[in-house]
Length: 246
Image (tube, rainbow, N blue to C red; front, side, top):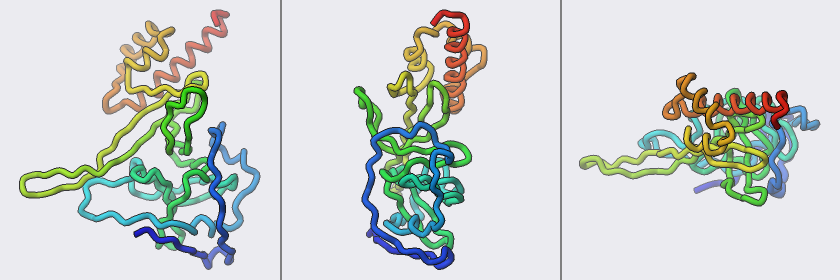
């Protein structure tokens, strides 16, 4: 059973925890940079006030988190306030951000709609909702893998799968991943070479040649290959502007 807690960190000069209304995000933050937020948290105790993450049985195969179950230190912007040096991990089964209290006792769930951005060493995380005329983008957390003219976003989710092997029942986490490219304000799902060529059909010949010359793979190396193709598309568009073709 999930428990609601009020946890005041004695090491953070006291501080009074207060209830806050949920603010539903109505736009995508233009950039995940601390410079946009002039207010920095003087007291982080409010981060550790809320709902605890449910516990998972040790016998489950895998974990419910994005990339790793280990906490990583990064920057969290919540309700317009920046909290530096926060230990975090993303539970993609619940689609909730989890923060680890400094005394290493509590795993606290952060209300998703209040998250402005999360900056981690490998990528930024944003909680995004459907927007625009074509609301094809499912609501949830996305990792921004490439921040250019054609931004690349990754969405991961995990489900529990039960499987009978002989006389033994096993339960494991199974991941489902989708990628999205933002082109001219519209988000398009992409899975590999074919969908990229369809999305950028105006550069089909150049992209086919580039993918072949670079030996790009859309299997195990799919993320990196998608990023490299998008970077190349951006150079093609730049050339078009310089040559007066666009």
